[in-house]
Each structure stands twice: as C-alpha cells, then as structure tokens.
Image 1 (cartoon, one colour):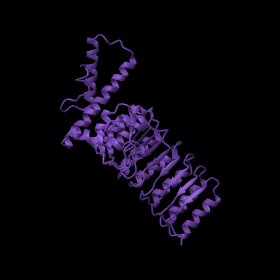
Image 2 (cartoon, helix red, strand yellow):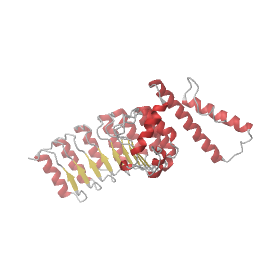
Image 3 (tube, one colour):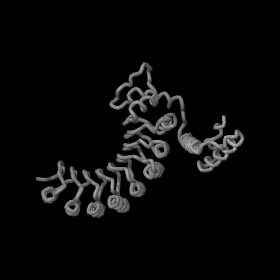
Image 4 (tube, helix red, strand yellow):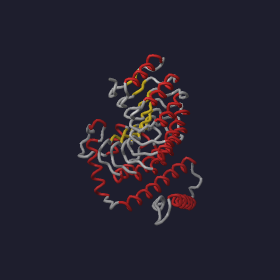
Length: 345
C-alpha cells in the first residue's frame, strides 16, 4: 500500500518533481513505520524503484496524449509475438499456446525482435512488464517503428538495469534526440558493458551524431560501431574525427552510405594517423573521388592497426583502384581490401 502513491505523477507534474515528491512520501512512510534504520542497500533499491515508476508514468502520459491506448490489444499482440520471439524463430518448449515473452527472454538471455512491426506502445508494454534486464546480453529491435518516446524509456532502463548488455541493435527504429540523450546515460554509465552498437539508417543528422560521438569519447567499452545510412556534414565529421582520434577501444567502424564529401573524409583520414585500435574500416557506397582516395591511402600507410578496408560501390576509376592496390602492397598490417562494384575497367 505504501507504494501506491509513489512513482505516479500528478497532472502537470514533471518527472523531477515527481521523484522528489516520491522520496519525501517514502521517507515519511518509513518514519511512521519505524524503518528508517534499514540497510543502505535497501534505500538504493527503493531509489531505483522510484526512478523506474516515475519514468514509466511520464512515458505513459506522453503515449496517452499521442494515441488512443488500448491496453488489451497491446497485450494480445505482445503475446502473439512470443510464438517466434526466440532466436531463429524457434518455438520455446512449452505446453502453453503463447509462451510468455519474459520466459523466452530469460531462457535465451536476449531480446530478438527484428522486423516484427513493434511500435512504441508494444515496446512500452515489454519494457514495463519485463523485470530481468540484468540477464540480457543481446537486444535486436531493428526495423521496427519504435520512435523516440518508448525508445528513450528502453535506453534509460538499460543504462540502470542491464549491466550484462553487450549488443544493442536499433537500426532503422526512428531514433530522435530524446533517445540519443538517453543513449548518453547508457554510454557514460559506470556499469556499461556495451560492445556492439548499431544505430544505422535512422535519418540522423549532425545534431544527433555529434551527441553520440561526444558520449562515445567518454565510453571505454564499445568496439563495434555502425552509423551507416545517416547523413553527416562538417560538424558531424569534426565530432567523428575527434572520437576516432581519442578512442582506444573502437575496432570496427561502419561508415557505409554516409554521403561523405571530400572535406569530411579528409578529417576522418587525418584521425587514422593517430588511432591505434581500429582494425576494420567500412566505407562502402560513398561515391569517393580521387582526392578522397589519395587522402585515405596516405593515412592508411601511416596507420599501424587497420587490417581490413571496404570500399565497395564507390564508382572508383582505374587510377583510384591502382592507388589502393599500392597501399595493400606497401602496408605491413593491411591484409584485405574489398573493391567490388567499382569502375576498374
């Protein structure tokens, strides 16, 4: 009963005010019950509970303002997802018609729901009913219309309650600024163990990408980053170059279809002279010119860590391809360069 009024927002109340009011209510309740001398760890758990409840309430209010929420329909759709939610579309060994999604997530320690037409209401239902995020290692929600509000809720929950998470795939999920602000909390969290981050094909611009790169500079766990299919310009390229210059963990960087122009690639190429961790660089579908190849070739020869380079479908002519082949011949570390789909002649 003590928790009924804790974690719920009053009309017009902000999340910050709600958390403050909830803490005061909790303290008064504990004083009345004589339980103010409990173990400090207990207080930490209660603070996390309050955080989750207020976050849940504020997100629900946003969704209610946007949609005519039908809780029963969301629950039924979520139950149907359970039929093939296991990795590889396998059915979980159970006698029930629809095995609980939470049971599948626990058994496989992953949330694998690629291209399942999950919207933000369904994601909200999953996030607020699943209690074992601490077990989850891999989350794949790619190619679902998740949008910003529920995605931000998910990422904030992961930042606090998912220390085992290693892979997060949010490709083509309509991320926006609120989700990326939440991503900042995840990447800078002391408990963050994320290794593989995929935010490709979300229509992100310099404003979004700069925020991501600033957070990544402070992160020391991510080794595989995919930002392909977004749109990067000068500001974003400066932020990317800064990240590449100072990162000591990044080993695979996917920059496919970013619309890289000459001055953008020049900035990135300069950072390759300094970076000592990158092993795999993917630059497919960027329509690179001869000057781009020249800058890239010079930097690759100065770099001592890159092993694989992908330059497919860039309309490179014979002269550009010849220059890349010279890099392969002279470099002591590069072992593989892919150039299919170019105009070699």
